Length: 400
Image (cartoon, rainbow, N blue to C red; front, side, top):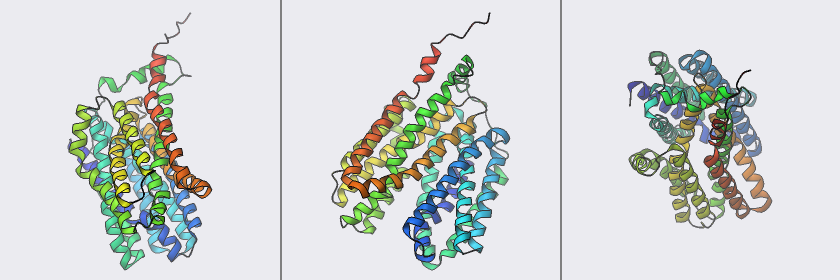
């Protein structure tokens, strides 16, 4: 792995550690410290996600226009400004304003990080994106653990610590990211799809494929976030202690970090293509939710989580890898912005949709619907590249 990718991995870990100090505790802070209802808390979290979607799209476009170095610095600066506001001003209005703005700022960062990872090590393929994915999960594990300890002393220290982490990230990016050399992609990267785009300005196979892929990715995230929303409350109703539910996420993070050698061996021996990796991963998601529908004790949920994590380790790194391969030269940032905003959209829609379905008919009604959504996602993963294959058979028009 090249030094430049290591710098991106370290930056991503610091970035996510900072954000993870706060995000698991937002609902508690809004409800218990600011005196607002959980419904209001959910609405503000949704606005934060929506701002992040907009930030993803803006950040991807910005990357294509001015490059990753300045895009990342702009995103970090915006986030630091927002976090300073959260640290200094403690009213409800200030919290809403700066929390939503922080979603926009952090959203700008992610497409550039992923696009740079693909460009600094194009020959690494899925390995580059898998490294960024692992760094994210290290950050989530560290931030969540440290955040709980800090919050036990003072919530204001959480905001201050988050600000300090992003200042550290700014220093890393400012000192080291400008020197990162973006390599020219291999011949295949200028890719078949980019060449096919020249068939007609009205037919863009890369965008068609990305749209199909995005639909599948969105549905996967809608299902996945149920573990943090409806399934968490379901475990409480079954009498499973909150401490045991927390163990499920500890297992999730531990498997992702320490299970990479096994995943690498599996992808090398079994997943001969990135498409196959994604299809197998979504199929494993389906198995997880089938088991989840039958779970009534902690052991059942633990096994379902282990299976879910294996699927996650295959699907999540695969999507940005495919987006990078689909992207015509000079549009890598925009394509990464699309897939990142799709994931954020799933995290935004999922809790609301799941909550409505559970309120209407209960968890036994929700699980089959999630399985259907995952089957649709599986079909999208299988057929996403068909637009390119179909258009490749269409001969270009001959000018008179």
